[in-house]
Picture 1 (cartoon, helix red, strand yellow):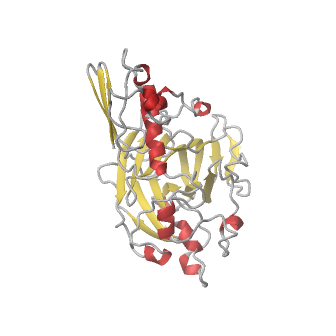
Picture 2: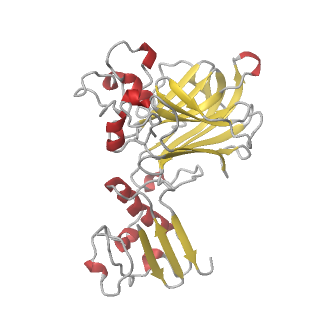
Length: 386
């Protein structure tokens, strides 16, 4: 779908891919709104030219300008009405972490509560005595050696007990299906509000490792899974709970290497190679900003990006240092969970993400998770004088 807007000194061409379903159209609509409210061109803001008229050739409320129509003839969700609306997520605008991609309006969000990281609403790690042991003088929170799995849930789901997830009777479980083909068609594990296209940011400082002789290992940002409680090898009945571990992992190591992993089900991994062109060096005793970004390119492919700030304590700017595209051919054996392809891309969303680390002592300064408008909805601006 292409929208051409003529507005005196500026011509904007909005080109969007993957607008076949209602959820994508919703994001497209709000992306236009967001971009136009942010454009800073003298006398040429999108929402100021009320004489612009649009002809909708696809019956979706968008299209090319048509001087034979008035704005009143258009559907309520047409371009002009959208750009005239104010942002509807102002409660999050005080968040100062640099953003790579814009936040999806009404998208689910999380931000670490710096005074109470176990907020009991989206995070509760009180049962794990090595996580958030105390607040440091600089405002960070201490994490001790051992197994670290910080589960972060959407506001819409709240903290989900595994007993609500691991139910053999599908009518009692919050999980819509354990079958990957069903999930691909549905688009989520739990609810339509599940995190799907996300920008997951962690600001941290590695202090030490308990592993032998400087062994390389990772901090991992895990997305799109629902449960890692049961492994395939430990399953002796017909339950498919191990399928809940299907996920993507954006990894950063203590030696400064970046890597992606795909967990096809729990616990069966595919790992890509470290990016040979990027070595950040020893990361100990430095405040690092790390972003794991995961978004759908279309209904069958997913892109993973890793961005870092090693110079300004997570305040930015961030640099993209690694990326990976899963076209549905990354890995094998996913048909055991009902996938159409052995390397099926994990295109469905989840109500949780995980900050994963083992055997590090480290500080956490900040964490943020946002549903984003993915760059697969591209905007190209051709403007005079820009």
